[in-house]
Image (cartoon, rainbow, N blue to C red; front, side, top):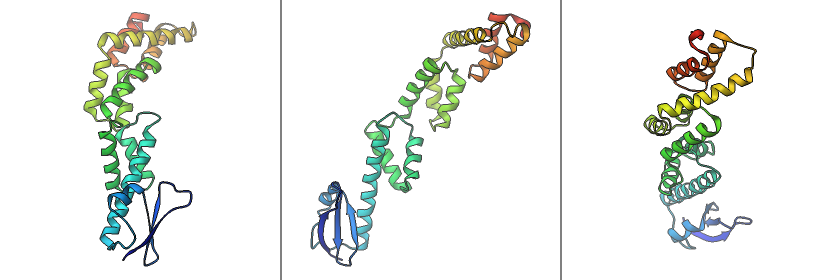
Length: 212
């Protein structure tokens, strides 16, 4: 079927309506119209129309993803789920994610590094808790392990666990003492994501061996 004409849609500055002789239309971005040289009189078969629709979907997905990623960094899994919720197909989603990676907008390793540093500094979480959160966000375990290892030496983990435990002790005051205090501190540190041996070492340091 032939293209009858082109018109800019009302209120759609970045959209051109391609009017076909059978009365149907295609909504295309100017970029696609120029790329495929769409003009009045051009003969479009069904395969070509399908290609144009797919190209339009890819472009729309890429732009939506760039906008989604602009406020803060996200993981590839978060980006994928976002586009799928918007109704884009798997092939289109793969294209948009690949484009975002090439632009440096998606980088799970860099995301993991930044996430670990922030959670360590602000939330005072241990490495196990942070690793669990990153894996839940879809970051590859190898990238998670590397990021955690580069930000948590044994000494750093002990120092942070000690800081967290001392703050917890201060909040408990004299309400709990002896073995119960040690047990409470151990459980608290464990829940914050510190390694069991680090939890035990810090609690022994602060309240002695009586908690066991």
